[in-house]
Length: 150
Ligand SMILES: [Zn+2]
Image 1 (cartoon, rainbow, N blue to C red):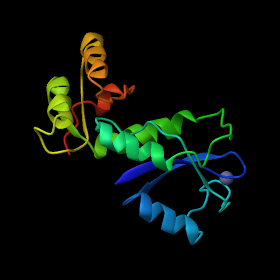
Image 2: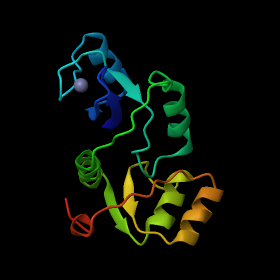
Image 3: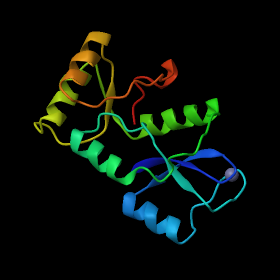
Image 4: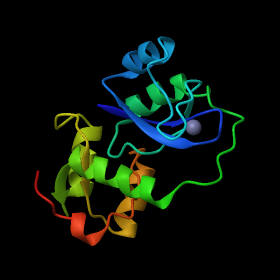
């Protein structure tokens, strides 16, 4: 699954989950994607940073497909949609806990199967991972969702 941040003509911002970029493009082309708040079907994809633990190759792929929503300004991101997004991420990632830096590295160097992971890392570990070109995203995951089994 892949999550896209989407926006409608009326500046509503929401997220959509799709099997792939192609799936999203197809649904968009057939006007199957509409705003949950106003029903508007003129949807644009916004730049997003919601995937975590992704590899450098996926990052390049993401950039190639971006750009559609450029020039649009969406100032108000509702707190509840952020909470919803975090909920989605918790549901769709593997919790590796404090092994996160090690696992992220293994995935980056293809020593472990590519997958979405979450976990904890110190500020120094985060900086070290970034220096190695490993793309990670820090999220304010609420305490009650941490360590949640799925
Ligand atoms: Zn709308």
